[in-house]
Image 1 (tube, rainbow, N blue to C red):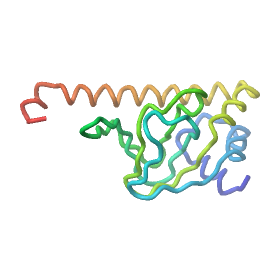
Image 2 (tube, rainbow, N blue to C red):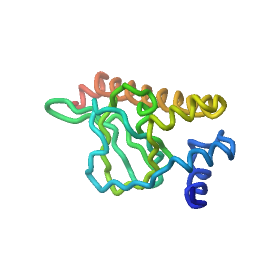
Image 3 (cartoon, helix red, strand yellow):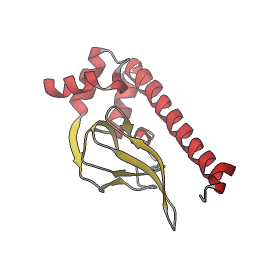
Length: 158
């Protein structure tokens, strides 16, 4: 565990409610990763693997349709990505694509799940934060659907 990773984690909004020992636990599991512009981070339906805390850059969460791609949400520094990695046996719900160079911290979903089972307090705080992420993603999807199907959008040619 490096002090630099601990510092990055302490500054990340996702970890605001985490105790110092929980930040240290995450730091020991973290791997720094980078994605280049237009690189697919994962496809919709991919096996779960990693959970990411975005440090810099922009990521598009998308639904790939046969004739087009619908952007559901754009994530930036301070956001998280890949919450389904903690639900082992589940697949990704969206496609994620880097819109510019992205720097992030990656965590193995299986390792996070084990840590949650071993430390109930850590698990509670992590799952509570993840529920907030899921809620945000559902709201973003809902707003996209409303926008696509609203009478105003139809009049504007969408």
